[in-house]
Length: 398
Image (tube, rainbow, N blue to C red; front, side, top):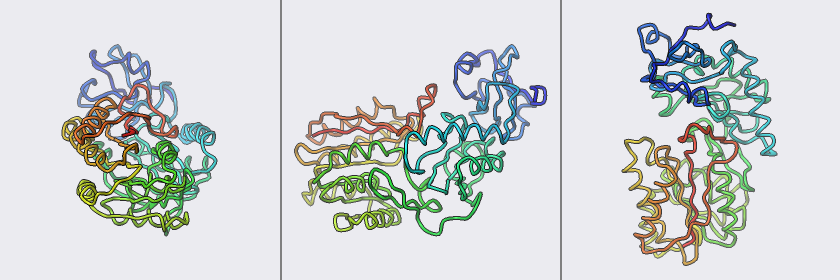
């Protein structure tokens, strides 16, 4: 296929063609010649992106409704974006995960870093959950699903078309079965010696957060014989990993009764129900209640949702992280460990670390950072996108 079979989209002279040639994967609306022809392209149209001198930069998925108007799919202009192209992407992604993990439970596709911009795929054995968060992927979804199943031996695929990313692309909100059948019960997921229950139909995002795997493992290594408090626990992430490593007890706190029920099922599957407790409520309120009760834990973990999902929310988000750190530090036994996490794109590591340190200081405690963690290697980073390094985990000894 030659480039004359594709429509063309052109950068303005101010557009950063050099960055794109060096690997930056996007072109924004304010960098492009947004003439009437470009604005009329259907969201998800494949096109050739050109620089201001009309030299081709690659094949892109175009969405005139999105600020990220062009997403680079392939830098070879004559490339066909077809079944064979998707098969090659999935084979490369699978080869990497097979080197990392003995069992088929991981993030299989991490968007731009795995060459499928805006696409997330989490794998749960023979079931996968896909998030097509870009218009081009939504348009080519049947072909993507064919390649996904054929390469990976997956029989069931859930399409999770929800979340902020799709809203920004102007896409509809839907969850449906893309291939096979929907699971009739939560899927048991072995990880770090623990067993987690993933609700891939009704849970948060894809049903489980694989990104925290190495951070779960590090904290679990500190937790032998310890009392553990796991705040914003979701389905028991840090608490169950700690129990798998010999923690004396784990208290899971979350605002979702359904998530806590899944955590309890995981504890039961592990045979540690006698050491597991759960407490439903607003995390800030529960932290204050525990302090009034005089509770102390050798290991405390706070893994909240994104308090700063955008630059507009940054300052309020940093105040929330500071408050979490202040309240949580009061519950840590002398010489114990406090783990604070952020999955906010807008709050970089330095800002998050400073907010956490301020909160610990305001509690009257003193801390040393003993570990800084990030997402696992099944969540590779795109070097040119700082926001792809969204997950930060700080472990303090107080």
